[in-house]
Image (cartoon, rainbow, N blue to C red; front, top):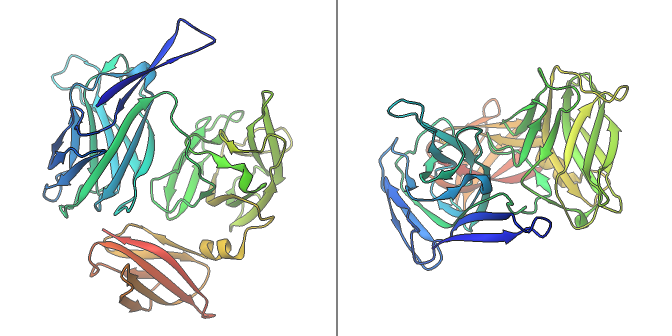
Length: 399
């Protein structure tokens, strides 16, 4: 059932905020399926994918009635039982005198072959186009950013879609950047451009605003009660010599913690930083990272910063287990063909098991790559062995 929930602002009694919620309880809430059938259930609707290859399954509501002024974020809770790892939320552009002005697309990487429901938060705003009442809303599912659905079927269970200005902040203390295109809630400010590729978050500093350039966490909160230390695995390809982490202070302003970082680096370094304060308690939101010049506190507008991992925990240094995980990264993951390994070690053997524990591949990778095109679509566990016979296991998804 579609719900409009009103919140009274105590400081402004006359101002009301409305959020639009579709909870899919015994109803499709006005949505219909395309290249798939949408069937209601007690607490979620199920999109059963029937389309062929290149036919992207989607659900559409042409009478959604979303109040754009009070629905800047779409909060989507779903369980994806398919190989499609890319969700697009779209709505029509404003009329421009042409017959079809087109649509706005907001993209989100999603996990595949889920065993539980997961929540995704997508900023759906777009200046002049996301205004007034938005009636047509589409959720479109693709294989990935560059490829349409592969026609392999599956289902997507949709528990709730909510449009709100106050999205929840799910807890996350470990950012691994393991899925291409997924910035894991980080946003570039001051014209910093962010991309995720090959297991790394890449911040392009070309042409940034030297006074405001930074990275801001806008979706997830960090559980400060799990520890006082931040660990950033970073390759700083700029002349900015200081890393600064900040978060909101209870009395206003921000708490700042700084440490030196290697400039024009040719390899990754692990920066361990104590971020504790009286305000580092509970669920901390609004964390910001900035690589800047210590002399004048500005950011040089050139080069790039590559981050392989950000971890918040109780360890003064990044644990050996975490360092081992950093030593081996797989990309792309999911993959439908070649899988590449990012590692400083020599991988002598890769063994892949299915979730039933059956061994399906044992091979020696060639040039830190392995062909998995013969695997059936699904979730697997890949175990790596290096030249010292150390082993490490990680999830691998074949789409």
